[in-house]
Amino acid sequence: MQRLFTVLRTALCQRGVKFNSIIWDWNGTLLNDLEIAIGAINQLLGERGLPRITTERYLETFTFPVRDYYEKIGFDLINELFEIPAARFTAIYNKAVANCPLHEEVIPLLGRLKDMGCRQFIVSAMEQEQLEKTVTDSGIRPFFEDLCGLNNHFAASKVEAGLSLITQRRLNPDTTLMVGDTIHDFEVAQSLGCSCILVANGHQSKGRLLSTGVTVLDRLEEIKL
Image (cartoon, rainbow, N blue to C red; front, side, top):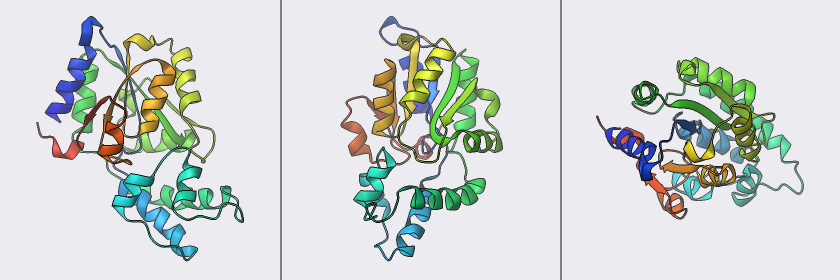
């Protein structure tokens, strides 16, 4: 965690530019939900007689839009509407997420960044109402000025939510940093015109994240103060 804080602090002042806002991804980046996501998708695969997915394959396969990921792991979305397994996944996931922990040391990190004067936000592919609930239940809602999720459970893209946040909160992309755990977070950052750091503690492998060319950190729980 000390390394993460050091990298973030350096990024906040890099190249003479003072970053004063951080946009966090939620699932995988702050919320340690990899295990329940894999468990939920394996339940769906089992219900359809399809092979279960390993953690390794999940990290190499998960992508946005999520529909593409479903097809890659064997779902027949020609003969079954994507909305059916997507809704079933959400129901299973939402029951399990109530007991899902944050990554280690997330609360101290958010506190230290707040003390530095950083404005903090979340942009997530989670449906808005569920996002509000899970962040609040995790005890970290006061750290964030705003939470921006989607208006459905289909996790297509976070770009629109990010653009809306930039506009409504009048954020300057040049002084905004995005932190996430997937290539899509990098893509969102590019669309917003802001800088990006990725953390390999969530839903995609470090090798895939490195392909973006941005700074990639290790899993948060492996970084000690």
